[in-house]
Length: 296
Image (cartoon, rainbow, N blue to C red; front, side, top):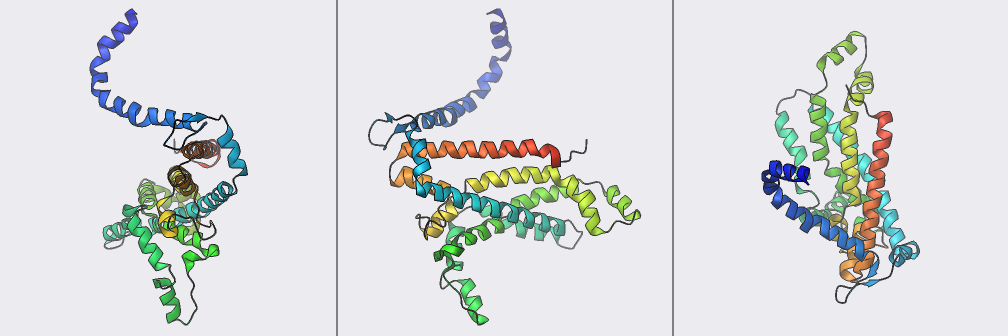
């Protein structure tokens, strides 16, 4: 007890200033998360008291064809959107790292799309661009090609959202650009003396030195891709159509929780998403020891 009194006496002012944050942590994060975990094991429709049903919600997921479809769509989206966005971000960062006139203007222009993020306005614009009478089809008609309603065709609808995600590569690009600025110039000078060309310099110097930045961007982009919601909701009108081709995991979670009022099932889905992201992130951290290079 004496040690506790001494600790409290020496630190109570610090905890006093931390009180607003602690209230927010408990009231806005810890308690809602704990309550949602409880709801995941209940049957709850927002209007009556939760009824404990154990693992029934999780068992139901295995037999829910629409749930399985949302998982497949989300995984496909993550596997395609993340590599494309990172590739474009790195390519543009390499170009902007050159000493050209007006470089700051170009950096701002490329970063602008990321400022809008997953906004409703951008998603509405995207729906117009790829619609039956949209800009893409007008360009194709100008060159004599036949277009189609890209967002209403099951085989192409998901790709329009992947293109949207790739277009918003600005935040990753800025981080890559900051990493490029930290690579010592003398490494490139030594490589030139040894006769290494541009491609060899990239493989042996630029890429290894950027692997910590790539690892950070990869983790953040994967988390963001798993949580994607607004583009699919707006483009499909909240249905995930056509034929569930844009039914993201988060969109189906929204449908179950706020359209069908099956909040217990939605809570179980949310925790499955959290576990999946945690497992994927942990796997990246484990494998990073083999491919991420730290200068020290």
